Amino acid sequence: MDMYDIIRRKRDGHELTDDDIAVFINGCCDGSIPDYQISALLMAIWFRGMTEAETAALTLRMEHSGETVDLTDIDGLTVDKHSTGGVGDKTTLAVAPILAACGLKIPKMSGRGLGHTGGTIDKLESIPGFDTALGREKMISVVKETGLCVVGQSSRLVPADKKLYALRDVTATVDSMPLIASSIMSKKLAAGAKLIVLDVKYGSGAFLTGAEDAVSLASLMVRLGEAAGRRVSALITYMDEPLGRAVGNSLEVAEAVETLRGKGPEDFMELVIALSADALYIAGLGGRGECADMARCAIKDGTALRRLRAMVAAQGGDPAYIDDPGLFGKAEFTVEVPSPAEGYISEMDTAAIGRVSTALGAGRLTADEAVDHSAGIMIYKKKGAFVKVGETLAVLHTNRERAIAGAVRDYADAIAISQRPPEKAPLIYASVDSGGVIRA
Image (cartoon, rainbow, N blue to C red; front, top):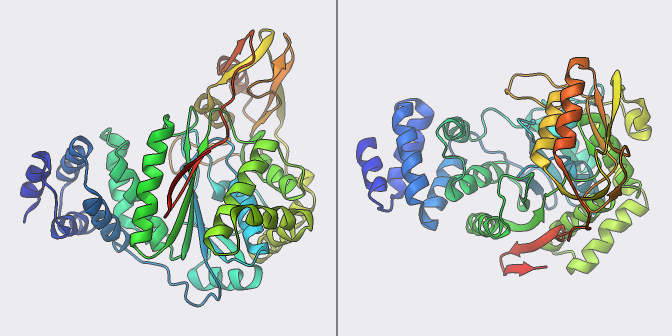
């Protein structure tokens, strides 16, 4: 079967075989299939969709398109966590230490931020000396020593996804359910953990805007993982405002540390406990209520924070920054955003707020762009808050003086103020596991 016939059959609505998909993925990786044919098949998939059998075959072929990580040297249950992205989403920094404190092992590969979403690796690299470029042996050594390790994704892991995503990004085929699911799950499977916890977001700051679309994606990913022999659970969470109050790399690390001290923002704490409980639940450590109590205990007795400190030290970072986040470098300029009107904050354009953070220097628009670890936003008024004219909505942190005026304007434009308090949707819409969907 050649690529022309594969494109034609998918264009006409036929199901591709595993051999067809193998030809496609092998050709993506060895360069034998030109970009225009890859793009044509991606567009055919976007229009025609894929059956679950096709999606599973695509996921497994992508998983094995490069190296896979062997974690058999690690005793105990290994856990991976994935979020579909958002603004102010620093959950790995709190969830991973909690799980390690509860006896699970977390060898985590994370990415960098791009566009309006932040990246865990950028956040951790704001800690002086922290090394995210560890090889497999060193990563496993750190996990054995501390219970957790967070490193950058290897370029040799799922190379097919890198090729396909670059083309999806420029051919308007990103928002295809089977392509999203196979992209995420191929990387999670290749990373080797036995348990996988997913945070699938919807809302103004997420890739998916509809709750039921997020449920469909999560359900598909859970089934793909279970079919591959992994235990998988997912939470469907609402991102209609930034998570927590801090947006930006060192600002978010500081907020994660405060959360592990039991003093974090209410919404962030709720999500951290829920994700931790989900992981402990699928690990078989108790019912969800018991597991939530275990997570809270790991915060209260300080073991989770000590795990984070130990990981930072083991990866070459200065643990003094965990002891005292006030040591982080400060941006030259801190500027208040005043409320333009009196009333209740009824909407927050979360993606727009993420773009403001990027303009301040906290994010990047291209993969090779540097980030300013001190830049970002501290949010003081969120959805539902009553504000008076001139009251501070947020404080912008930046070293880019020329960006300030536009950032102040754009942040204010991202906030809607009304005379009635809004109805706030619950942060957690549903949970999904092998037993099905439970809506909150």
